[in-house]
Image 1 (cartoon, rainbow, N blue to C red):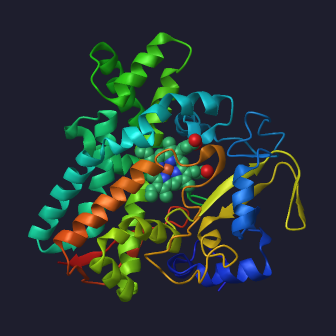
Image 2: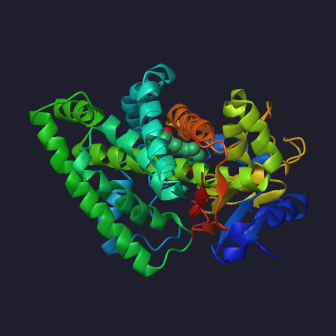
Image 3: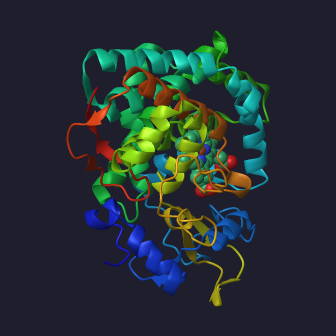
Length: 399
Ligand code: HEM
């Protein structure tokens, strides 16, 4: 098999191909997308921190200068929302936006949320156990992070069912070469989501509550620190980034444990291993397989000159199995201590929500281990179609 992100077989098990890439072609040109694939941990890690690359080039060049056709007009509402969030901008705008929200995500602030996260996880798992099991993705993995981020932001309970579909539709644009239909769906979702958030922010400005949207709406009112468009972009980013990957770590993680029953037994016998286990599940079956960067100044990687205007695809899933960094990398070891996985990224865009994601995962795996000590697979799980955001569509289990 070759690197083929559109082939379901490759998506289900990309690790042998990565192995070959790391050994034989650690830096290689991938014709179908015109990107350079970067397979080794050291290179991925270095490029994420290298300021000669960026998530965007629009702060230093036009589409024409980068030889790109430019956005199609119908995509306009999508890019307006996405490029107003910190993930798709570079300094100095990135620095300003990240500083505004990072106060809500310090380890101390997030630690204070732990009791609430534990309560939500406990309630979801109790109901799941009472039903005797079901689909772990839709019944536990999805509702937990969606509820947590919706509560932080202050999205009313009655509206929360709208969030997951909007987010999933928007994320469709992040796959490699999305179909025109997926693009239209993403644009429509961005428009609806954006209108919804503008309405909510305006009502909070008039009637502030103890939530992040109110706090951001008040900052926006002060003037120069945050525009309304940036407020919307920030909330959409937090809602999307705040749960897509967490859902996939939960699903992929349980599937990893079921495929490694000795490790599952080890974790069942010692819940003290939960925090190393969560890191290991994020490494062993990486939820976000690939992130892209634009080359803003000529660089050289592994003996190849990569010119300005090119795009590199950093293969996180491959970096996380690199034997130069991880002893016995193909082994799932829930007690692995030395684990510098790259799943939360690195450099200035390092995941802002990492402390929160860790708490959510520890609480949800912990609740399931305690309340369903004999949890078992009821059917072969089904992979979703995504490669970049890679996770199971469903995983049916019995308690
Ligand atoms: C296990 C779950 C998660 C994983 C694996 C993950 C992974 C990542 C990665 C790899 C990036 C950097 C992307 C890049 O460099 O191109 C990122 C950025 C980000 N993540 Fe997460 N994330 C997770 C959960 C969360 C949560 C729960 C939140 C918020 C509540 C969150 C908020 C963000 C934000 C705001 C950024 C943008 C940071 C910036 O551009 O400065 N993430 N995440």
